[in-house]
Figure 1 (tube, rainbow, N blue to C red):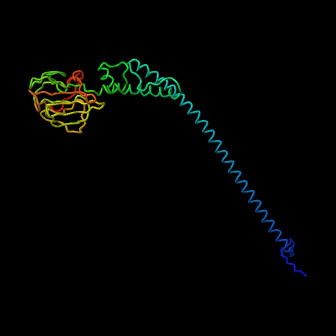
Figure 2: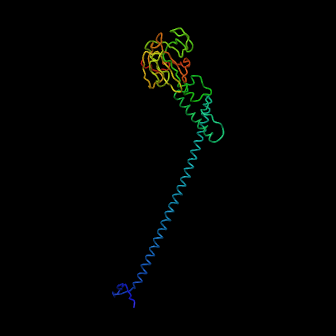
Figure 3: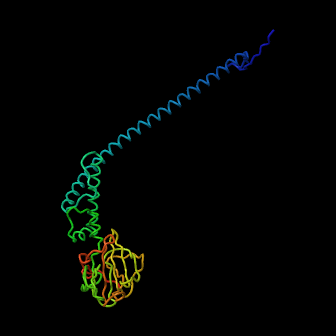
Length: 302
C-alpha cells in the first residue's frame, strides 16, 4: 500500500476552535509547477513588451530624424538658392568689370555642359575677387600705368605690377641700351643696359620687390647685385662701391641694395642697370617710370 503525504495547514476560526486542513503533497507539486509556468509566461510577456517598447522608441527616433532631415534639406535648398542668386550677381558684375578693363578670362571656357557652366561662374567670381584684391593693393593702378589693358588677365596685371618701375638712382642716363662704341677702347659693342650717373657713394635702390640672387664681384661689372623679382624678371646693378645686401636676402621696392662706385670697367661714378626677361636683356628705359622721391618712399641709408 502506497504511503501518502500531506501538508497540514493549521488555523483558528472566529470562535477560537483549532482547524486542521490537510493537503496532499502532490497537490503542492502541481501548484509549484503552475506557479513556475505562470512566472515563465509573465516573464516572456514582459520580454515581448520590452522588445515592442524598444522598437516603438526606435521608430519614433527614426521618425524624428526623418523630420529633422526634411527640415535641414529645405533649409539647405533655401541657402543654395540664395547662393545661386549671389553667384549670378557676382558673376555678372565680374563680367562687366572685366569687360570695362578689357580683361580676358584666365581659362576661357566654351558653352556646353553643366560642369562648364559652373566652371565659368567660379572663374568669374575668382576674377571678381582678384579684381578687388588688385584694386585694394594698388596692383591694378600700377599695371594699368604700363598701358596694357586689352585682352590682359589678372595674372598679366600681377606680373606687370611686379615689374621693376623705379629708377635705381636719380640721375642722368649717360649711355643707352643697344649698339654703341665702347668708352674704353672705342670698339663697337652691344650695351645690355643703361648707365645712370650719380655721386660716388650715392644709394642704389631695388627697383621692385625681389630676392638677392647675386652679390659679388663680376668681371667687367665690378661689384654687382642681381635681384630676382619672379615671373622670369631679374635686374642687375653694376659698378658699385659697396654692397648693402647679401645673397638670399629679400628686399622691397625702394630698399637700398648698394652704393654708386667705379668698380669694374668704368670711366666715372655711375650705376650700370639691366633688366632681363627670361634671361634675355631688354631695354630698361621703358621700366624707368618713377623715382623714389615721386613714390614718396624713404631712401634707406642716404
